Amino acid sequence: MNSVSGNSIANIARLHHLMDQNDLSGLVLSSGENFTYLSGIVYPGTLARHLELANSPRAVILVWLRHSDPVVVVNATAEGLARRDAPHAKVEVYEAYRESPYERLVAVLEQEGLSDQRIGFETNFISAKEWKRLEQKLPHMHVFDCANLMDQVRWIKTKEEIELLKAAADLLDDVYLEVFPTIVKGDRECDVHARILHACIVRGFGWVHGILNSSRNTIPYAGESDFAFEAGDVIRTDYVAYNRAYPGHLSRNVILGTPTAQQLRDYRANRDVYRAAIERCKPGARVGDIYDFIVDEFAKFGWSYKSIISGHSIGVWMHQQDPIITRGSDQRLEEGMVLAMEPHWQHWHLQDLVLVDKTGPQLLSTKFSTDEPFVVEW
Image 1 (cartoon, rainbow, N blue to C red):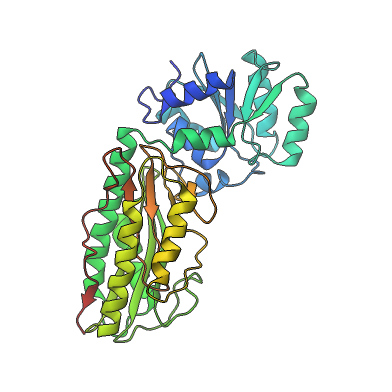
Image 2 (image 1 turned 90 degrees about the vertical axis):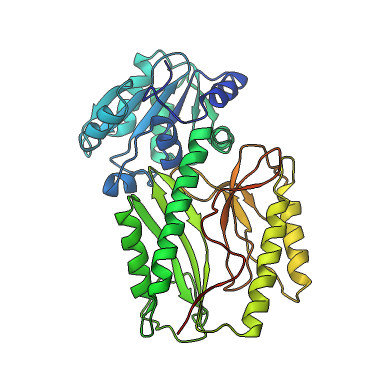
């Protein structure tokens, strides 16, 4: 069957094409992106945090077999969700803290006749200790680094994935449109941040993170503090909210009080560069050329653009994925990619989800107009 749930939204056809191209009998996947992508199991809370640790004593591992049903290696705490949400997978349960998950993995690979086969591993997500264990226990296995292969699979979205990403973006814009008008004098960054988190959770998002800062706060990625807003401030946002592990990822600006002429000029200049960059997101476009275009466009306004990225692909579990829109990259955009584009100057930060389509870039996040800044009259 080659589907954990029987109703997978992952790009299985592309996955199997690349596996066959690289002569792979199976894949061993334990990172949050790849485990969640193929298994369809979305772990919450502490179980989710363990998916982010390469040395977790409570790791969950997906063994994806090219020609038979997959195997999920889990501990007892993670077993229930695996059996519910991956009914067609074989479930192997190990005793966490007494048994390494990789000891059980070795047994699974031997049972499935893979101990001397060519198998893909995420070499960037297994600790040196566990690598040593695998080499000792399975000396005849042929290891292939499948991290890049899985990136290539995930970056071309299926119709169902695109629908999930759009739904998450729409929900996040609903949150912005609800919370922004409630900002009043005396509110602090942490107060508005809390209202955004609450509005996300009640709409069904599984988890949320992001930034919300005043333009007078010169350290934007230091958390939301008790820094109080004042009239004339520009609020910068950059939130990621996950719905069924697929993120809405959007940035919007708010001006508190009547905008000055300079604020309007700056907002519109940033907006125009931003939109011009999106127009270049077409199949075949070289990523490094898009970045260079953004640098040149900002320079026309006398602005020196030095951001390390101007956007990125987006997908399950982790919002920032390849390709990254960065200086010097030779990667090419492909039809079916979804990008979070965010070329911005200082606190003027716009970000939307864009589908790379053969007919041209398609905006997925359409609920919030960015034609002009959102203004809260004080």
